[in-house]
View 1 (cartoon, rainbow, N blue to C red):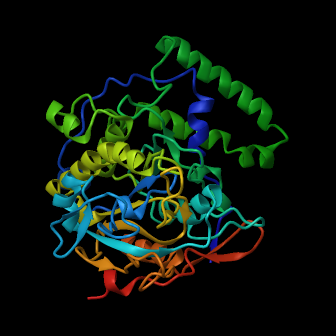
View 2 (tube, rainbow, N blue to C red):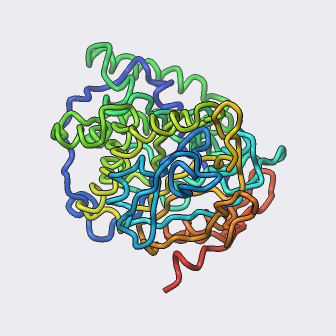
Length: 422
């Protein structure tokens, strides 16, 4: 069991503490080749494409055209034999062969907040314990010692952020709301001499506070936060958050949207060795006008995720990166009176691939008549995350000890054999 009481800096507090300091962000661009940047033994990364609001499986990765539940969406063939996805994703259809499709996810949470918590942590919400997100867990279990920027990054935000839970706030995702423009508050607002004077004054205050308060001072993580903040603010790795040096055709391929730029930044963060990156595309809660909602979102998602996958493959990054595209639940087979689909936590879809995972698999199936609620070969959320953790090279059964002395395993599921077994 692992003791979680060790002191670590809080990245979320870095910018809050030093919002007035900052250093120049005019730094050289990143090398474009992963092998050169991270070496032949590079660690693995996790990219989660989070579709906040709950996308419809029927208008994304599990269409049933010409059926009672299919509405008017068309299906198109893909580079995976016998797999068709919604016609709204022509670019993804060409790149999807590096992933697998799970069409039979089963959750027990149909509320947005609870569903988000369950799908981001692998554990149902519990009033006695705040579970860490999978990104927090992975960054905690396999930190990159060469990284001077955060190990866990959330791009474009979202209503319920990925949290460190019982691991501590230092494992909360580092938030980037407007990707491609570097990090806020990293550029100095005062001269170099003035900044040095401020740091000197801060040290005097720190030493005065420490007198007679050794334990309290250590618990604040103040000195570690200061040291780590200054390291990050001086780091050339900060350029991973910028896209100014990217060729215009590359930026155009991802799409000139916050999400598109976020996916491009995600690729750059993987090149630097960041352990977990989450890119959020909100607005999938289609209780009304379901089809129009999905057309609008697909126009953003399709070019961005397709270009990301192509980029990862071309840069030799996919074998060291797990890609997961998912939301908190799916949508009802039945279209309601407002032309929308309501919450459906049974038999929804996700995309998963990269690293050691098998590609080109289609797991599970849903009933095109809508009569059978339970899908074929149901996959639980804990099993999904046990699979992801295995692909990341960490022991999903390992137990962590919470601050109150409760042992909790990284996942209480089992890996999906179709995706990992030879």
